[in-house]
Image (cartoon, rainbow over all chains, first blue to last red; front, side, top):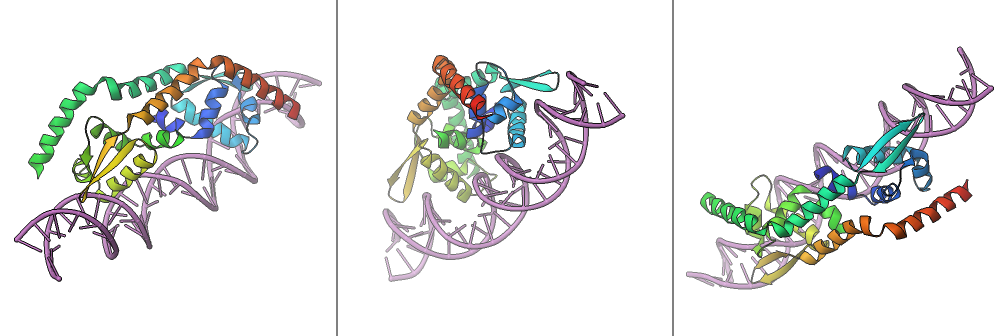
Length: 105
Length: 105
DNA sequence: GCTTATATTTAGTTGACACTTACGTAAGCG
DNA sequence: CGCTTACGTAAGTGTCAACTAAATATAAGC
């Protein structure tokens, strides 16, 4: 999840993820979408996205087809949700932490 | 929104955000929570969070009280949601982009 | 086997960023 | 007023991430 958040912090990678969100796409087609950077750069971004679990790779002959893995994105949403929903537990944690801090002084 | 995502990519800043999620806290108390880094580092993180709109600052005498601004977080959730919900519009955009790409070749 | 198409990998550069140390400033306090 | 408390800002450092160019891998077609 940490890796996914970091991966999404880069605009170019969000753009890539959008491209492969609804259908799988070969690396070339993805790279062609970006005129500002080289194919190599895109390939490296794809590796980051893959490592973060945000896309999956499937090989077909010499080509590699990428597609979004929505599962990881779901986890991210859940993580954000828990900033709200787990308020009670965190209130307890925070109180304990404050206590520890106080004792330290 | 871009700034918020980038701000949250850093674990320490997420931790800070959690601390001020339920109640406001002076900078010192926040810094005291982190024994591994200096107060200066925390101060800089707070600036990043403030710039990203994730926390608000309120001055009271010499102290500065920070509190999470949940609004920005809400926007982030909405952004993630739209990776799903706006599938149709994006399908159209993507088709147009593919068309442009094809013409370029 | 050689070539072409598709794509990654490696090496090297540059800029961003998290950090520390040092200093500045503003508010309260004796 | 001098001192302390509470905080930010400036300058400098090490590390990491994004990028390019060149080298490399792998499958297909002839």
